[in-house]
Image (cartoon, rainbow, N blue to C red):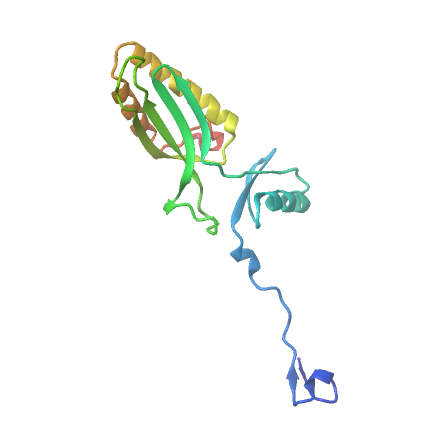
Length: 188
């Protein structure tokens, strides 16, 4: 709306145009946070994970808990095999971009062949990015890590080379979803 000096005190120097005070597109400058609810995982733009949980709960009435990324999700040792699921900042197109609404933070699986008790061998670790969202339930990561570590340890105990067992398993999990950790990835 444009005002003249008789109509608005700030127009004393001539005409004054009042600009609408709309909020800038501030939401697009906020990172995407992930929250867990009874109905699943949701993306919410917010400054912190705790703010995202509060915003989601206020907007939907559904209780939400924040997902906070952490580097080590789970580590399981079994015999000469160590299985770790980690979040190393990887996403859909390389590095995870928290400002991209469509990007997903993915877990990386590290499978390590541990040296034998009387061995001077170096640790051999094989690592691949999976298609498993890192915000998955940590209990599910623990279940999968334990089952995988036990399966691989049995192969080593049966006489297979620990390094080769670890290498094969890591390659098999590369770029793969996992319906134990992420039930939504189950093929229909």
